[in-house]
Length: 294
Image (cartoon, rainbow, N blue to C red):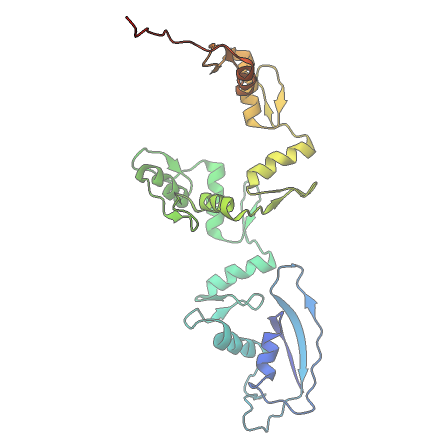
């Protein structure tokens, strides 16, 4: 009996790879499973302990106990032959089977599963999985912005943000919608736009289960439940749940009335008040008529 303890796919594909035509088992072969799923519901693997009686005398058997036929090598062979294209790398994660061309990249990736964060900020003690992410974070404390736009001299803490900014000058929009011809300068904006086609609303309220297409809209909605009013008037300290409502309120103090009726020219501080007025306004401006008869 050979005990194979390894991480395999939840659909038992690896076990089938071992037992169906790839390794000859005796007629009395047995298999016993002791499974413990990952803490994450989305995990694609589970830990399985398999006991199989192997007929090593069979001619077509590729099981060689003396030839380092370890769980790792069996899983490696399965992944190489059945799942991953050649050239994807010889180092693979034993938890999710993702492959890497370099050991250092595998080590970094494995921290996602282990939660290890060896790089710590000495200023605020926040920790990171990669040294490069720590360097980026430290700039939030120092204010350093080493990446500068050559067209407007605006500076950024990260190279990626500079690239996004430069598209404002170049007009480049490399991300195109697959449903219409509209293009975007940033991938995130494309994803937001495509939801107008698909109707996808991935952001759900934990209080009433109402869903939204954008995180920002969910944040606004949550304030209905929490009562949070982060936007405060500097003149009277009145607070609001949304920035737009604060802007409307501030016009009360400034006496600004930017919304005017095109019929009677009466002005209002808020557009909603203008719309109410226009429904009631029956004053129609008459143009002088010219008599064409002599």
